[in-house]
Amino acid sequence: MVLWVLTILMVIVFSFSYLVRTETFSSRAFKEGWEIKFLAEAGIERAIMELFYRKQTPPNLGEEELESWRIDGTEQVGTLGGGYYRVRLVDESGKIDLNLAPEVILRNLINSLNLPGEDKDLLVNTLVDSILDWRDPDDFHRLQGAESDYYQSLPHPYKAKNGNFDTVEELILVKGVTPEILYGNDQKPGLVDFLTVQAKTNKINLNAASKSVLMGLPGMTPEIAEAVVAYRQDKEIQSLQEISGLLGEAQAQLAPYVTVAAGNTFTIESRGYKENSQAGYGIQAKITLEGNNRYRYLSYKNPVIIKTEKGTSE
Image (tube, rainbow, N blue to C red; front, side, top):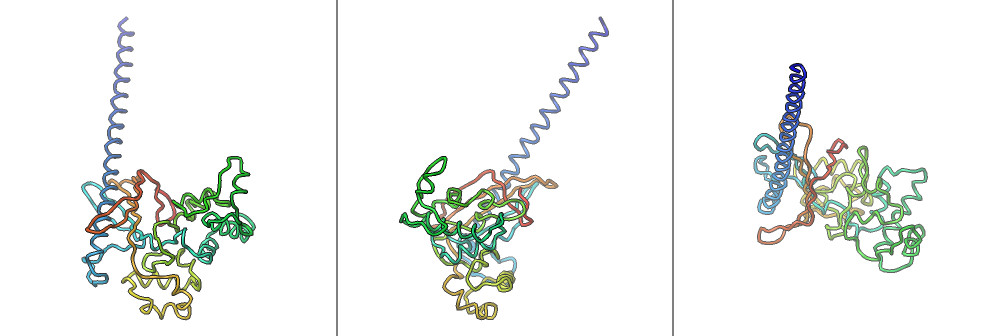
């Protein structure tokens, strides 16, 4: 009887010990989860503050401590308490506006992507024609495009929009667009990384555009794109004449499609981390700056997987 009682007591003690250990780890994980979430939110707030600072401070001051954050996706790091945040700030004017982009820019951008499949030319023509058919107001489809008659024949039928895209994600409804083409993967980006519906202009901001977006411009070469990106590492471009030496003969061809003026809508990607931790918490927000030091959220995704510069996701 004594042995049985001792055995039962030992089982009870071990069970209680296991439960306490589980609760302790669970509480710690819960606490750290909220901490990195708050760190990511701090990164969002810091980025908004930096945007207002840009509006009030002339660019290219030449003093590092007074320089404002860049708007081309350059990663910024800030520390807070027992952790830190990594923030990227992207001006939407540095992306291609899906509703206003000329056909040549859409074609060049899609051509520059490593699309799956054997017949790449046919896929590019299908994507470009279908995007243009989706946003135009008529029911006449281009050679490789699609209108309502095609979409109505699908297992789950719907009609062509025949109007502007409301979001970039709406592309998933367009003929030829797959999740891999739209979102990319760990090895390559997707269309969603280079397109926007908030720029409200058919021109690309040279101070904010990525190399892939620059490659979508007529007359652009990899050498010129790399030179533009390298030039703006030191200071923002104030005019096309300033970089005429970099653009060379391509300047006349590029001029109708580019600008150096910043927009009012920005994407902020922030990741919060605890010290010595690889796991982070991601938040993505889109905001537009309004007058009188006011701003408005257009979207707020929380949590979200954010692609890093190395091509992996967190």
